[in-house]
Length: 243
Image (tube, rainbow, N blue to C red; front, side, top):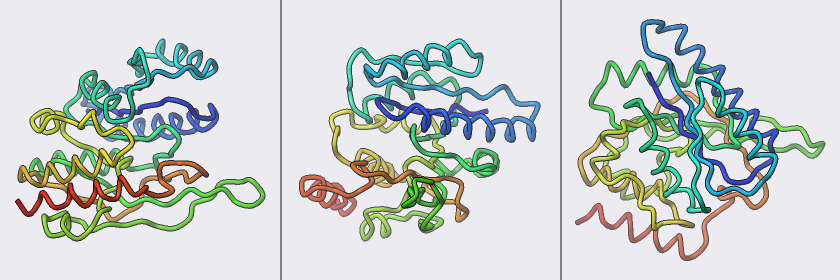
């Protein structure tokens, strides 16, 4: 079956609860469709959070059979936290979810089945919709973001965004073989660097055309844009595909 990997540091608890509820619902759809498979798990990495209500919430979740919580002693950043989580995952197929986003029904089933029938796929993403707060305070799905179905080196050379990080399912053995995330890239686009590195190693990256994910966009979020240092990092990383 699959492991679902969710790093968390600080966020409104209601958002996190909504995220996990969406994961649980979609895992139930996957397990009901394939009852012969072992149960899926949800691996949460607490990235050194000091948020009291979150820590109490994680303590409660850790007592539930489906959940495992990994604690980092300090705030190490997303790439290092993801590496801790990958090491803890028990299943070969790992699905990524960001702690304030929402997984839509059918995602895990679509990804799991395609990766079972097409073992050459190493990473499989999906399309997504932005999840935007409206003037009255309510949240609603917005713009659709879709990428090419098959990511080639040529696409990697001309595009800086060809996979949606929170939507991907990948093979643990493949990430381990290429060194997983670069833990030194805190504050930079660790996902883009990983995709480029996988392409350099001849790995296969695909996207599903359907949207199975709501990416929450809020003021101050990492999704708002890149700074000049990260922009230079992206150019340098992209250029390695020409080597």
